[in-house]
Image (tube, rainbow, N blue to C red; front, side, top):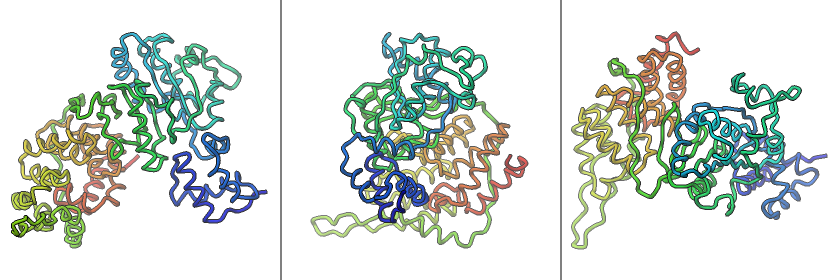
Length: 499
């Protein structure tokens, strides 16, 4: 019989899970954590917690917890665009770099094996490779899932994205299940490993050419995620490829990778050396001739308060410069509240003049440069704005704001395929970026991709309700939240509403 854990014990349990497994649970998950603790702690939760703290790593108690705490639902060819990019972009590049040696792939957080087996099949289907051309190492902390992976028998539901022809080629019927062929199974080696812990053998430098670590980092604490990405980067060969889940980005976690966009998906390439320039983005989307959108400005009497709140971040950069030894006072500081107000009122020359008066030590700050790029783009100085954005992206390829302003400029110049790719980059890097999602939907509608437009505009409508006021001020083109929401609703109405 189990005892009900106290709030303090649940909090201690949560801290232990973060420390030992790297899994992070917010306040909404405390009830589930309490149930898991009660189930594993039995009659004495305090003794169980003390045991977890004292046990060395690895330990069976942690392995059993991983079964209850990790999400295990997956299927073959999940997120097929990434599998296509793996087979048609990453694999050919790595085969060339390996000069005849097998390509080394890591599937981190492999669950019940569908992902690594998919990679083995895709390499054969697309590249026509034999079993010796790719070596896949698959790791997970959940022993029950690894046992299922090694058995390699799957339900029809797990094979729902596999065509009948492929199912016939690679699987044999085994009662109600489908058994994977031995040739594919031999390409994958399964191991029980904890991705949140240091592991010199797993993360040996230069061990992998391609790493899949999908839907793992999203459960880690920020500190654990950053540490895990650093280990992955160290273990990858220069020029290798990293695939994350669609809800995950390296923004704020690492600067060791270039952002890639092909096959309708985003992934990363390991830099060969620090400071390596980003590869040119490729745009293969059809052009369109629609005019850029101009939403109507609605009255919003609260906008002055928004300006005041949004100015705080930029205003903090305008601190007084250190007083010189000869006793001269620091130069007067510009009124950045006024600068942002000018931006909102479309007084771009005044805004730029105030930005130019910033103390020299702040002239190169990324936020100041982004504010300058926005002001230049809105004033029509597109070439200057793009130069600033490119300089920002040369320093940080994962700067969502720079991608967004660059997209605005490319859209204004009529290069809509490039604009759409940069908008998508901004939305991928920062999933809460409502304005990027709004622009994507508008462009998709004008390119007659109506289902995608409905989906993205509906998402933009939700995001706009919660978008940070400072970002609306900086990127909203002078329009308040209410106007942008009305624009989004009007676009959805023209499409017949979400479906």
